[in-house]
Amino acid sequence: MLNKKSKGLQVGQSVALLASLLITAQIGFTLYQGNPFCLNEGCKVVEELTRVSPLVFNLVGFFFFQTVYWGLRSSRYELRQVPQFIKTLLFAGLAVEGVLLSFQYMVAHAFCAYCLGIFACIVLLNLLLGFKQATTGLFLLAVVVLAFASLELSPSQKGASAFTAGTFASRPGSTKGAESFLFYASTCAHCEKVIASLQKNNWATVHFNPIDQVTSLELPGSRRTSTYSPATNRALLASLGIDEIPVLMTRTAEGITIRRGEAALLAYFGKASFAEAAGQSRAAAASATQSLIPGLEASKDGCSVAADCTDGSSSGVSRQPYR
Image (cartoon, rainbow, N blue to C red; front, side):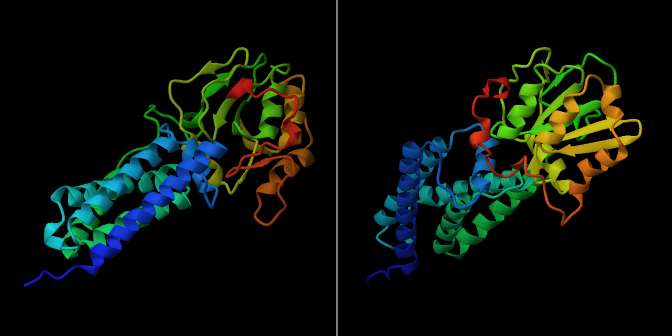
């Protein structure tokens, strides 16, 4: 009696092949353009917060799906003939995807559309291998997500606040006064001009809180911190409803003043001392913070938190100071 061929395995083989072709196209696009292709801005956010090159992830993914494809093909579409290592490999794929998706949700606070497509393929492959494979795989995925959710992902600095946990470097000022926290991105042209202005205006004490991964801050007098979290900075801005940088938060005994946009920050740092900056009128301070109210128009001299801002306004200014 001939064994009945599984239509699910036939579909699974096609899914593995299509996923391999998708990854091949992504690798080719990355090599040609220099950046991966994605349908939303989440890919850029996730890429900036990971240390492994997207090309490495894609190469591993290609070999993963090719192994699954040939393993399913060798089974002649019979569930009993599917190699055990293929089932184990699909379990491992779910576990890895559980970590990556948990990272995107809990750390990066953004989802990569391309990554979600790969995740869907792995879930579907597990489902197509039968009830036992599907239930075990989904249980494993749930365990990984719950384990990731139980971790404390902020830097383990005793007494670290939402501000200091995200500080990459600090530059003490020449005059005593309030401390300011500058939220910026390495791809923002407006942030670039603000940081460049600090080369000449050194009265203010500034802490630098990037929303993406940076490696250096070549600013005289600046000091690196031992650890920092870009995700903490993103989360703080999101909690305040701020979706545009640069942002300067200045803490004083009276409270926190928030300034947004290149013009407002350049005007503040352009003062000769903190006393002069603090002497600004209440009307000016109000105009700097009114943009936080939902529904009001955002400033025109800033960059979106979720996108690059490398327009022509950055010409003539070196990016070296904070890369």
